Amino acid sequence: MKWIGRTCGYVGRVTLDYVGMALVRAAFTLRILTLLVRRPADGRAQVKRAVVEQIYFTAVQALPLIIPLALLVGSAMIIQFTKVSGEFELGKAAVILIVREIGPLITALVVILRSATAVTAEMSCMTVFNEIEAMEMSGVDPMWVLSYSRFTGITSAVVCLFVVFDLAALFGGQVVAWATTSQSGDIFIFQVARAISGTDLVVSLVKALLFGLIITVVSLFHGYTTVRKVSRIPVSVSRASVESFFACMLVNAFVSIVFYL
Image 1: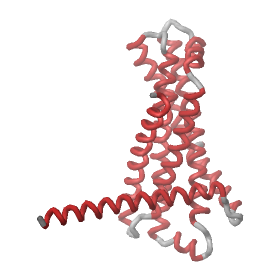
Image 2: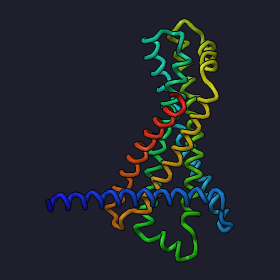
Image 3: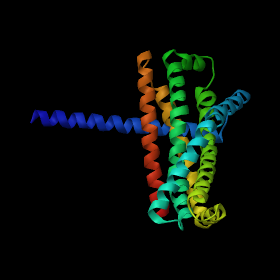
Image 4: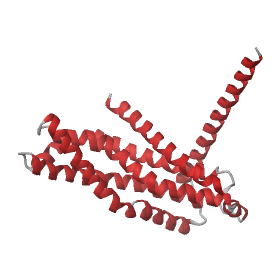
């Protein structure tokens, strides 16, 4: 019977560890969200500059990647759908596949691969080399100077990139519909306009905002909690990337179920 007691004790410790980590992450997220309402007066110029730089890195520099990717995805989706369902529901298919589901996920994936890894590596290096402690000792709040700017910049960038991805993907679908079917491109756009609804736009924007929140919080949290060894930096980056994408997949499915079932 002793092994049962040891097993129960181990399970209890693991459960408490998971609960404790969940509470810590919730407090960390709440701390970042609080800065959106109560922003300190010190260092606002520096933070604004950091927000602009983060938007430039995450959104502007990602355009040469996101636009060709959106064109390819939109074209491939329409080509495959024309072979299955004919040419009369292409607009509705584009809305369901691109605007509702694929657009937010691929946008989040691009941001994770480019920005989440960079932010996690940056914060991990600052943690390992005691730069965050040095900021605290000098009276600077790292959550305000570092976390707020990255949260605002990445979340704004995800929303903007999602809009760009959808427009480019629909344009690619329009070109393919015009080139491979008997209908004109204007008919495809009319079908998209008729199929899309206000709920689709709201749900997509909600997903983009939640994805931005998830990616930023997970990346910063893993960066701040990196074990102070240089060899642990790649581990934190890998964990943050996988956890961000998995959490975005779960949120995407949950939001779709809530709004469309």
